[in-house]
Amino acid sequence: MILRTAALAACLALTTALPAGEVAEFGKTPEGEMTHVYTLSNDNGMKIKLLDLGATLMAAEVPDRDGEKADVLFGFDEAAKYLSDDNQYFGVVVGRYGNRIAKGKFTLDGKQYTLECNNDPNHLHGGGDKAFSKVVWEAKASDDGRSVTFSHSSPDGEEGYPGKLDAEVTYTLTDDNAVRIEYAATTDKKTVLNLTNHAYFNLAGAGDETINDHEITIFADRYTPVDETLIPTGELAEVAGTPLDFRTPHQIGERVDLMGEGEGAGYDHNFVLNKTASDRPGLHKAAKVTDQDSGRTLTVLTDQPGVQFYGGNFLKGQTGKDGKTYAYRSGFCLETQHYPDSPNQPQFPSVVLNPGETYKHVCVYAFSAE
Ligand code: GAL
Image (cartoon, rainbow, N blue to C red; front, side, top):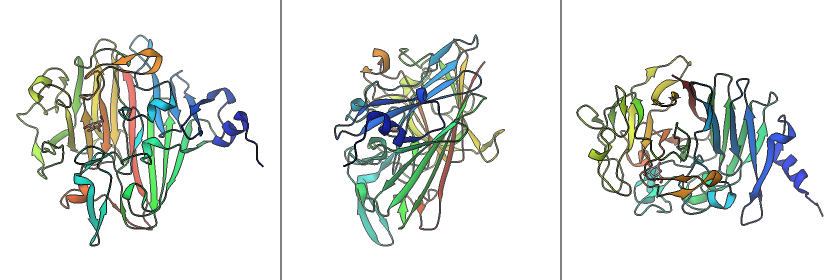
């Protein structure tokens, strides 16, 4: 019989180069599996927290223009809340397919696959209990203690997706206050894949009641219009002349009411990125957001063709870390991704992954203060 003490379990969960104090238990799943929180720090004193549960980015303490730090990320204090139906995907990795697949169906080589329709009538963010946001990933720190790599192996047919998929997500906190997220995956059967991170930000500090005063630029001339179930119509429409035109900076709140009101209404769109060059090799600029009061600024860079700008339209005062509540439209997500429903839209960039190929995706959340 093997006895696993909590300390041994923590040790097994992380082949560590992190100081012992930087790994802590985060509570058990209902099945009794212990989860862990990992803290990374850089030479500037910035810290981020990561969870093996959902390979989650759960906290980021970011300085403002006077050096005053605030945690700008939404999250929960308990593992059970990340596993609840109302987890809102705070900071988790969503997969296998981030965003929606129409009616949970797609066809590869003449064979139809059926996924759970967990967002009636569609499939959303990888489905149910075995979605990537709801499982405990294995963790390994880099030798320099600057990164943690989470790995997860998903068996053939899990959540309805073909192929045994081996996925890795590496988070690195760099000394210029950027969180670099690198995804990699391989399959043993032709499949579809679209991983992303679902972090919610409020640059005034998570729990602040609004993002309306944040100024956003999105480097996109076009977006993918959707039907009433949020599935793309297939068109790549111009943002010009619409409240989605963020090619020059606008406050998020300036035109949001033109997008409708009530649960779900507002900004929740996939933008077709222009591939605007950035100062990081291989990455283009997706978006830039500034909270003018604090000066905290987030620049999002990626190698992906799209970004979902979601303005927190389904938030309704959920209680998160330190008892803070997250009000309607008080946080935004910028999910770097392939376009929604790509498996059913052959004119969109392909999301097919074949055996022998490696899926790769880089997203950088770079923080600064203006
Ligand atoms: C977003 C999606 C929204 C909503 C949200 C989770 O990625 O675009 O429509 O489902 O996740 O509440």
